[in-house]
Amino acid sequence: MAKSALITGISGQDGGYLARFLLGKGYHVSGLLARRSSDSLWRLRELGILDEVRCIDGDLGDISSIERALEVSEATEVYNLGAQSFVATSWQQPILTAQVTGVGALHVLEAIRRHDPKLRFYQASTSEMFGLIQGERQDEATPFHPRSPYGVAKLFAHWTTVNYRESFAIHASSGILFNHESPLRGIEFVTRKVTDAVARIKLGKQSELRLGNIDAKRDWGFAGDYVEAMWLMLQQDKPDDYVIATGRTTTVRDMCKIAFDHVGLDYRKFVVIDPKFFRPAEVDVLLGNPAKANAALGWRAKTDVASLIQMMVDADLQRVRRE
Image (cartoon, rainbow, N blue to C red; front, side, top):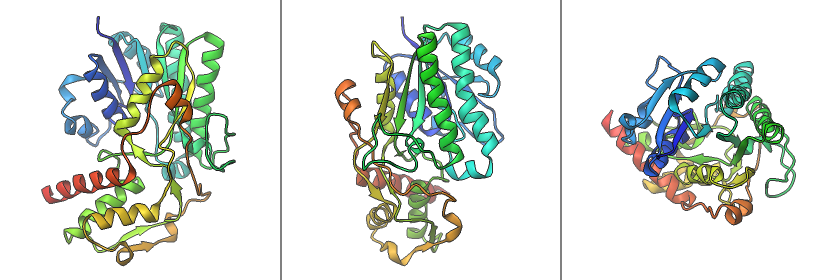
């Protein structure tokens, strides 16, 4: 029989790529879908899989709807990707972020414990939990020191996953994912903000790009690569936590240069530093050490940052031309 998976956050970037990956593995795929006024299904439509997945109405704030989704989907694997995932917004809506991103994971785990503790569970943790970094590279043993309400909420979800694993013997694993981007990234994230602006500037629809701290360094990978690591974690005999990263770091400045160079423009003529885009507490450098995932899962990032950014610019050029 084909396996069945339930994905919270299926309408997001990672949810879309994971759904496509699992469908390719022969899974029946269902997604918990919190209905919103805007079109939240465009990523599934763009990936050409909207008609292949079952969307189940529900919300991470409503444990009864999660329990119903477990029953309806007949899931054997549950991937909790749903969250309020934009760091900047977490400063404006810290309580909502805590409820959805933090307590939402607890709701899913508690629903699994009640419904069937033999289900396998994946929690989408994040490098933002490291925050004020201690050590040049971050791995599974690096202490956490989150620097945003989002990072704090994700840390609650992460430790809740560990707690349910140890207390109830649930096969619960966390992927501590470093920044991962794609053409499906939301426009509010800096990589997509840059590539969309590059497309608009190239096509004469925008004159400048306003950014905050362009010397911040991030470990950027391709979301399409990273979802394979999520699946691999749930295929292991024992649950565990893994850092998923490229092991290479790039500044926002260099990322801008890659994007503008791709269309033959000089980023220095268009990028404007705007203090309003600086965070109240900045995370200056994030650089992951994926050695454990390399060794235990056989996983490695396949896409370098230049190829990733160029892919995103090309996708945004097509989108802007269609407007």
